[in-house]
Structure formats: C-alpha cells, structure tokens
Image (cartoon, rainbow, N blue to C red; front, side, top):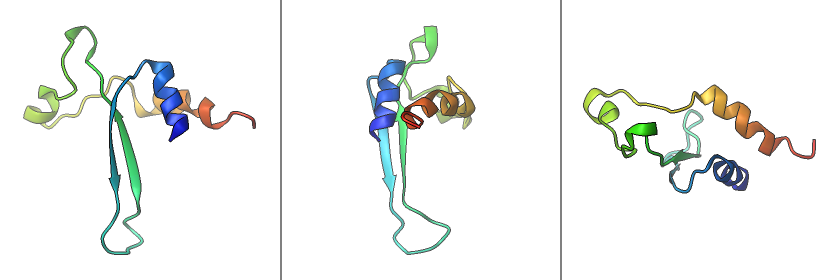
Length: 81
C-alpha cells in the first residue's frame, strides 16, 4: 500500500477512495481484494469524480489507461531489484 501512496504522491493525487472486499463464504473464485481509486477532477472541466458519464450513461471514465498506470507505478515495485 505504501508503494501506491508514493505513486499517488508523485502524480499529485491528494485523496482517494478505498474499499476492501472480504468474501463471506470461502470460495476459490472470490478472494480478498483491496481497491484504491484516486479522487480527481476531469481536466479543464473541473468536475467532480462523481460524473454524468458513470451515473447517467453507465459509462466509466478514466483519465489514464490501466496499462499506462501499471507502467508508471511499476518503478515503485521494482526498486532495489
């Protein structure tokens, strides 16, 4: 978690939402997982992270592709190797 926090700091992310999912029944398909979602505005629009695309159109919006973020955050996990 600390490595993700360092990445967020470098990217200028000052707040985020977090959720931890713990399955009630032990089942191989359901595992404990934790999600971090940075709270950001959408560029020059200065809108909140609760946007019309997701709530009215069911269309999530991301400022960066997951592949780009994975490459950027990778350096925080590869230090010292």
